[in-house]
Length: 199
Length: 191
Image 1 (cartoon, rainbow over the protein chains, first blue to last red):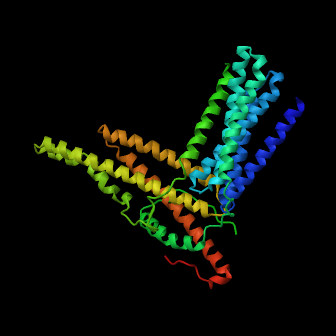
Image 2 (image 1 turned 60 degrees about the horizontal axis):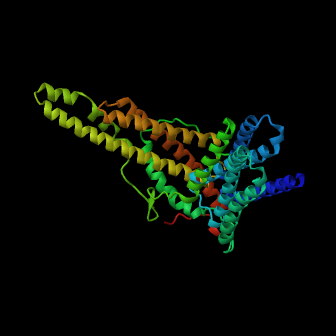
C-alpha cells in the first residue's frame, strides 16, 4: 500500500519535471513570457495549494487521497493558466508538445473527478468488494487513451528548438506600427509610465 | 456528496472544459492586424471623436423641433445614433488591434513587466465594461458623451504605452543588429 503511494509520488514528480521542461522548450525563445509563465505557475500553485489545504482539513484517514487530488488540482490549474498565457500571446506550440501538455492536464482533471465523485459514489453504494476492480478500470482507461494520443503525436520526430524571432521581421513591422501610433499620438495624454529598460 | 466534494468536482469539470477549449480552439491569429504581410493603414477612428460628440449633442435636434420639424429631428437623431454605434464598434476594433500589438511587443521583449501586463488585462476588462454600458445606453436612446470620451481616452492610453514599448524594442533591435558580425552594422529593414 505504502509502496504504491510512493510510486505514485515518483510519477507525479516525473510528470511535473516533464511539464516544466516542455513549457521551457516552448517558451525558450520568449524570455519575457517565460519569466511571466514562471511567476504565474508559482502564484497559481501557492494559491491553489492554500485552497486545497483549507478544503481538505479533517479525516486523516483520507489524507493521502486528498493530497493526491490536491496535487492534481494544483497541477491542472497551473498548467491551464500557462496554456491560457501562451494562447493570450499568440505563441505557436508544436503539435507534439501541445498533445503532451493537454494529455497531462486531461489526466489530472479526470483524476480530480474520479477522486471526488467516484470515491463518494462507491462509498455510498457500499460496493467495497468491487471497489478495486472498478477503480482500476476507470483510472487506467483515460490513461490508455492519453498514451494512444501521445503515441500518435510522437510518431513524427520532435521539432528542433525554436529560434528567436528574427530581427529583420521586427525591423520590417516596427516602422509600420510606428506610423499608426504616431498618427494616434497627436491627441494623446500620457497615462502610463514605462520602466526604464535594464541594460 | 458534501460541499467540499461538490467544489472539487466543479473545479475539475471547469478545468476539463478549459483545457478542451484551449486544445481545440487553436492559436488565435491576429489577421485583422496584418494582411499579406503588410500593416493596414486605415483611418484612425478616435480622431473622429469631436464630430461624434457634436453629432450627439441636443442643440441640432432642439433647433429642428423649434423650427417645426419634429419628424426630421427624430429621423436625424436615429441616423446619428446609428453612426455613433458604428463609431463605437470601430473604436473596439482599434482597441483590440492595439492590444494585439501590445502582446506582440511583449512576446518579442526579453523583459516583461508583470504590472504592465496586468494593467493591460485590467484595461481590456474596463474597456469591455464601458463599451457595453455605452452600447446599451446608445441603443436605449441616452447619449453618454462623457463615457464615449473616457473610452477614447483608454484607447489613447494604450497607444502611448505601445509607443514607448516599441521605441525601447527598436533601440534594443538596433543594438543587437550592430553586434551581429555578418550584418554590416545595419538593421535589416527590407520589406
